Length: 172
Image (cartoon, rainbow, N blue to C red; front, side):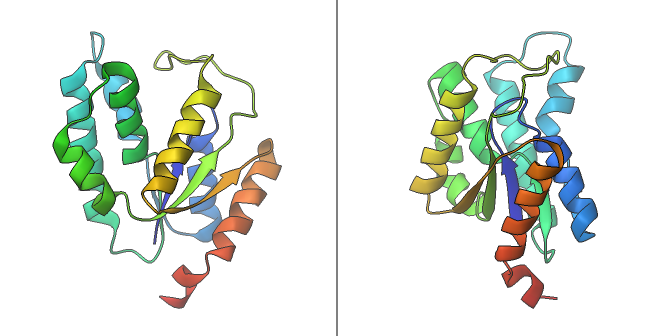
């Protein structure tokens, strides 16, 4: 089962993906976009977002045969980023997201403090972005749950949700 950890910037996605991976003893796929954008010696552009989306698709292809895998972000965030930053979404991504976005989603509520990071851009629109992620996930028919709380409470809330999606255990 693919579980995508999603949400706006600075909502604990990376930490949550690692902690869930450790708790369940399974793999997680780190966020490619962060690493890629941090390595650029220039502002990112629409071609960079396309490259990121294609890399995410490859990561999903490579890991989808596992019983359970956590993805630190996924195509939903990239889709919304195209929409928000450039007001256009490549046609191939629109067609592909319903296939390679399949899975369950943990949507991290922006109820924890913003932490500055050189690749983060939007401290003031986290709730707006989260609402769009929720709308898109729902419109595509993917199951999701909101993850709230701080620190261990947030992690425990996510663990309870994953446990409730017990079909991954039956595959073992």
